Image (cartoon, rainbow, N blue to C red; front, side, top):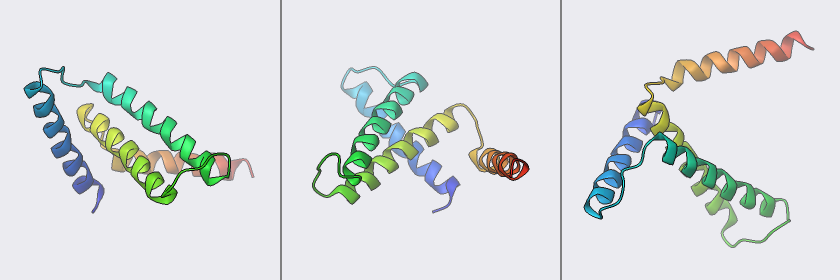
Length: 106
């Protein structure tokens, strides 16, 4: 899948969560809650990476790392879409800026 397809899939799941929350009488998430969820997922990812470096133990570690990375990507895609940020050109621009900064200092 390309980034547009990933974003469409992320939006589809976001809408399902919103409908589920409404049906359950829970608040629909805003960007603030998605960002908080992202921070929680990053925290979970850090713990799994600690296990990858033998500081903790988890079963099915590689599967859990892949899952948390996907959770993080989902949050980023949903937040970017909500804020109307086109990640493809922004990512390319940022990588070009970083590349220039690094090569200029070599």
